[in-house]
Length: 431
Ligand code: SF4
Image (cartoon, rainbow, N blue to C red):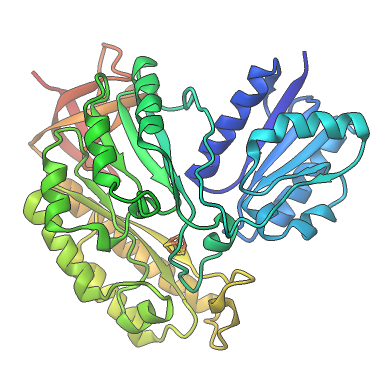
């Protein structure tokens, strides 16, 4: 039996697309093996956001060529899309595919194997207007399943390469999303996470349809108990949106609202489309409808020109909002983006100091948020067992551990919270 192995870099969307490509190979009779195992074909699904794709791809190719020097290596994804010539010149690469045409991966790998010739089918994606439908049966490793509902982004934040790597917004047809939700429900998944490159833009290319329509339709799928939104932009939050969300009992009280900076001058240089005052309003609106909502965010420190004063402004804003979790990123320039050419790049030591102080503040705020729920009853979807404890997440995205004799994995269970430890809560199964 022919064997294929995958190596995935980057975000959840890439993990999702790897699953889809695995299925394409399985449908053609291939066996999926681990990336350290002997395989006939190795696929690297690359990312361009980390800036490390080139070296990681090279490392991986060197490794797999030692395992099987005759293997076929395919490089797919954002890095191939943005730098196809660079990928072409990496020794040992046989197939190069960008962020479209992944459906042809099996055919192209087999052709490269037969002809022993490099194939590069990366094409310009700026004019793509259709969502590439790929079939994913399940996300094997998790209780929660991701559904990709759109691709691409039209926002052009000055630090981000994604619009160049993924092209414009293309939304998936609602019927296809519902079909996939039903399949996931019948495989036992209880929670669906709506994911994409810029989820807030869902429907912009389809006319009279938006994210809320997707949420309402998935709410009707039997077996799905929770719907979680991945990262969204503040501008999506309106009174109408919140009221519509409340009509579904399944929507998680968790909003990952990208902030990136709490300083208006930095936001402007980042080409973000909101001010901190507007952001604050959106958070207040969420909390007025869902007082227990977990508000999480991403923040970039050390953006070009970020002064001490601007960073302090961000710290003050963060303290004022009181996030339940923050992902802190140190800015690193991406070739091909406007911000990479800005003259006043911030020194690495300063970025590290700023990152450390923000992480410290974030940890403190997370503990404070978790503490609010001591003594309360909460529902937890349990995902795994770790040592003596079952672990899962609440609707508002707090990690909870429970000691139980019964198997809880894959179930939504009511628990009594009785202790707060590190970054999680400890509970007993409720009565
Ligand atoms: S919204 Fe900005 S940061 Fe997010 S993908 Fe689009 S361009 Fe990149």
